[in-house]
Length: 373
Image (cartoon, rainbow, N blue to C red):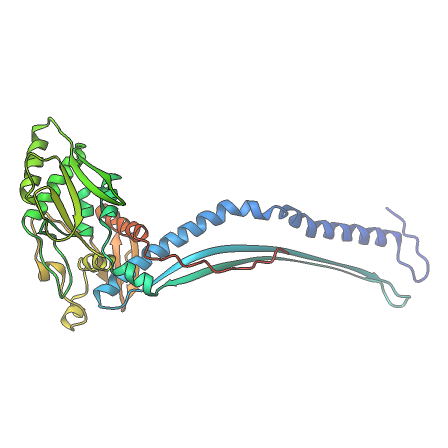
């Protein structure tokens, strides 16, 4: 046992040593976690990057679906873009130590204190897509070169034409909507089915021919030995009114051609694409009966054999658990089933089409000043 030697009005040696040990221990307890946070910046990149990518992706899907639903209800679609994401971290610490003794009969007293502070301060900048340039880009027909580039890069030609095209050489595609809704010509499903088979076997090609200061886009059919594909090529030429002995055809914007070596494509705008997609939404019967929204696509335009729905968007009073994307609008939930792969693929293609058509314009990003200490 250690003997304590004290003088009148002074603390014992054991008490002093214990107090010193306690102070050092508490100081280490406060400082060790902060030393571990010295490299906090690099450690957050992997976590933050994927978390923000997931959050932005999900919000983009929900925004697209909401605008489709709003378009169906004749409500104005509104787009909000995330222009920048800045995450700022701060680590602060404070340690307080003190001791005091008084002469008897008062007793000695010690105090030890400490604090630590961790701050996560994200700065997210939003930019509403609006103005003259955005409106024009939303209502301007999709450029013909963009449609051809999609096909050339491997996107299924039947999907691209169903979504982006009104007519090809006067052959009309189906179109949803309450005012200009119509069914497709009976030849249109045959045309895109034949083109899909030709593309699958590598018989469909595109190229650009410079003529002076302009460019001419040419679609050509490669010579194939497969008898079935040869028949499909003949069918495409017959439906479009093209020369049977020609392999190359110039592609232009318009409803009708000038001769039998031209393919005229009347493309849609992104607003028309949204209207057509929204016509597939399964809206509540009560809203149809009340006149809040027009009837479903089958009732308004009819179903053409060979053209299944582009997308299946369901509605109900409650949100389903197994959904790819869902959004609430007017006390009803609208969603795409996660097990409906064709609908998911077409919905994702629509989202990418918005990016390809640059509906966001070229607005400058805001300047954000972030303190470094």
